[in-house]
Image (cartoon, rainbow, N blue to C red; front, side, top):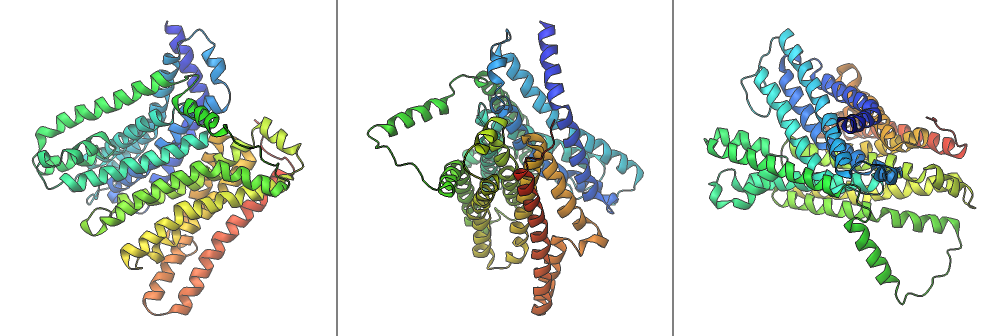
Length: 506
């Protein structure tokens, strides 16, 4: 019996060891950049890193854990082995939890070391203002709790998906839904007795913002609720994990059966269609069909943003968490569409098929690239910009101009890494590292901030407020040119590599 468990653990370790190393390096680098030159407030950097980590990484890990074996076609081989599927699912689930917590623990230890070496002058962490180690580790705990809750919800929602793209989009929608619903729940019961806001209480206790609620309970002398809500949070995570284990590896999941039923029902009485004559029209039709999940996810997220905007003046949306949520969703969607969306069509069998058709690889690439770019712009970026204009009377437009530029660069880097690596996991990691290196790291250093996209837009905003519109326009043009140059270089390089079938072979 123990040999089976050890074999499964060894399989997961062999599959995820480089992902663990890469994820730890990325998160630790983000923490060091956030804490750079502000070592005396290291707890704040830990808290910010933990929250940003919790909004992005559970979606990525849920995508890998839930769909990797299905997309690679190995689930049938695993199911044919003399090992119960629930054991396979349980080991995969706990492998994801290990991947989830290990980088946060490394960040916490690094923060503790810095805290011991540099005198602390205070903390702006999420829980305490007295500075020191408690706030630092509470920030790590809050990020870990958010991550675990989101991971459990995403795992049960995205299990058995056939592609990483579908699982990733489901994870994005689940993350935005839970965080937004939790923010609404906090706003409904924050200053009221719990008995008058039961729905809001359940919304917060079942979601990733439970740690915020516990801190609020402690401040408002509601300590009796902390233990009961902690037990409820644990039950939610255990139940969701159990559902994922039970459903994992089902030969005919519910959505597949519903899809087959709908397809058979829709085909009744349907007249045969004439074949599409133009290769470009055929590619556009294929991309439209593949973009439907993206459009649906964008529509759902747009509705959530409208809900946030409707309560903007009542203290619902403002704050670091809301900004991180909006940026995280758009950038994560851009990263997934640029990497996983391309990799799914670059699988050996599919790519060989497409190269044998009378369609040039360059034509396929540019249609695929433009289709994904339009999906991101129409269903993710534009709704956020429109809501920002309406809710802030145009005051936040200059700040949110950063969003479409970052989205364009991340999407282009993702396409380049996908065509270079052709692996859904490592292309995401490489694209994320490239985006951090080119976009976010320079914004953290005074000597490089002036030549970063964020620094140029910030300077343009300052000049426009002083009435120097000409100089502000030049800075704005420089930011757009910088982002456009990176995107164009990455996109053209990806198209050339794809045309010549050059990529890193494992």
